[in-house]
Amino acid sequence: MPESAYDRQLRRAWRGDYSADEPWTPPAVEAAAADPAGARRRSREEIETIVGGESESLAEAGKQEEAKMKLAKFVKFREEKFGGVLFETRNEKVYTLNPTGAAVVREIVAGSPDVIAALKVRFDDKEGKMTAEAQAFLDDLKTKGLIEA
Image 1 (cartoon, one colour):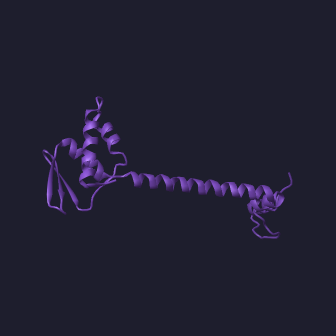
Image 2: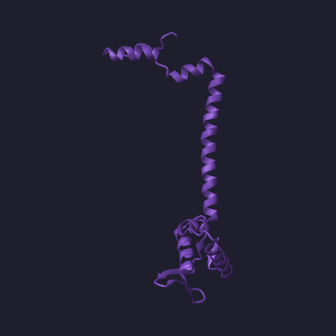
Image 3: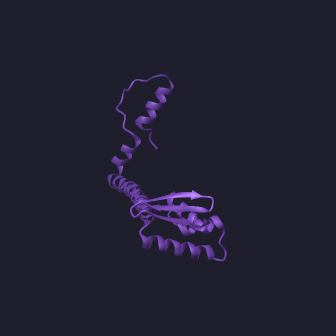
């Protein structure tokens, strides 16, 4: 393989000669000049890979944001020894929560994308009793307008 201008310049630089006697062309440009169609194809593939990766990550982030539940803007949560309290400031209602209800609301406040799955893992719910209770509670919160999905 013939020595490129870059290789010759590099060899001179190692000897202490930093003069630029001949014009230097980057190796990628030399390869593109030798095979223009191949260079265009490689560039297109690289761009498609970058764009594809970014669009997938944006779509995934959008799905996670979309799936997240959050308390309605007029609802406040406070943890207590017995569980927790939800304050609905619009109609001035107070809801007391047992420990399971407080755990559900705590996951919502934390921004968990899948509240039920997070609770299953956290409390090792083998029988599914807590899962069923938590799902019923979430449905009730949605019905009352206390959470936004």
